[in-house]
Every structure is written in structure tokens, then in C-alpha cells.
Amino acid sequence: MPTAFILASESEIRKRILFDAGFKFDTHKPLVDEDKLKSQYRSLAPIDLSVMLAKEKALSVSKIFPDRYVIGGDQICLLGSEIFSKPLTASKAIENLRKLSGREHFQISGLAIAINNKVVHEKHYKAILKMKDLSLEEIQEYVEKDDPLMSSGSYKYESLGKNLFEYIKGDPYVIQGLPLEAIKNFFK
Image (cartoon, rainbow, N blue to C red; front, top):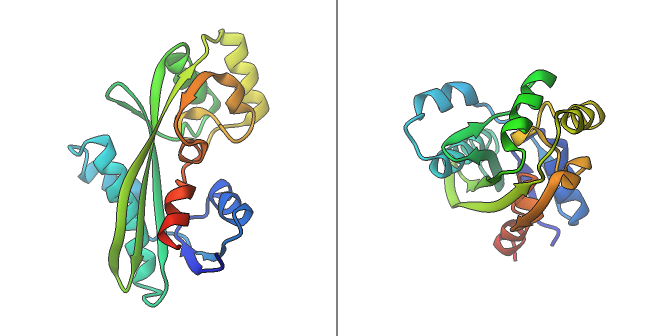
């Protein structure tokens, strides 16, 4: 599966997932203002929002490299109707994890693949997670050890975060923000 493509992301976990799977690829930062797009499309359902953001990321890089496949992805953590963005601060991560503690929520990964400035694949993938009932002290200790400030949902599932859960239903790669099986199937 040595197909060369461009990952429209600077995410270390997404790069590691693809590298470990044996893909040859380059990366390029997507040229989109996510906050502006989220504000502009705030009426979209979270699933549609994740796919729209993935498409915008893929297309922004496809304009620069039109002859190469470009993969765009976006991840949304959803509890009821509340979207949990990257917390950016330890206090916000603790607040988010307190809300998720003992509850079932979703990680949604939007995926888009573009070539020649055209999206040729778009879909969302979903995983269900139930977090253990965690004490404030456990949450604070986790945030201090794993530093999940740039992680959807305020946890790094690929690291110590996997220990926070009672169960998961779905693909662990979806939880990490990149539906690997879908990418493998696309490039078969």
C-alpha cells in the first residue's frame, strides 16, 4: 500500500497512525480558519460539521497540490448536543472531563479525500465511549500526567486516556481522529 498522498494536518497522532500502517505520505497544514468555519456553520449537525471541516481542509491543500490525493480529517467529541473542542488549558480540560465522567459520549471523525480540487470521498465515522466515574483527584492527576490540552474531548485515548473508560464501541482509530480502515479501503 505504498500510495503517496498528502495529509492535510499537522497532528502527530494522525501522522503516527499512517506511518505505522506503512503509508508513504507528506503533510501540509490546512489553510482554513476552523473557528470561523465553525461559527459560520454552527447550525449544522455535529456529524455534518465534522465532514464539512474535513472537506474544507482537504480542498485547501488540494488547491496547492491538485495532482495528489489529499486527506482531510476532523474530530468532534459530543455529549448530548454539547461539542467539546480542544480545551487549550488545564482548567478547561478538568471541567470537560468532569462533565464526561460516568457518561456515554461520541467521538465523530469526519474524513474527506480530494484530488484535482474535487472531493472524491466523504464520510463520517463514529465511536461510542463510556467514561468511568472519576473523582476530581483522578481527573486532575490524569490532566497533569497526559497533558491533553490539544485533544478532542480533553483526553488522549492513544496514551493514558484509554484507562479512563469503562467501555468503547467502535474503532480505536476513529477515537484517535483518523478512520484508518476507511483510508486503507480507499487506496486498495
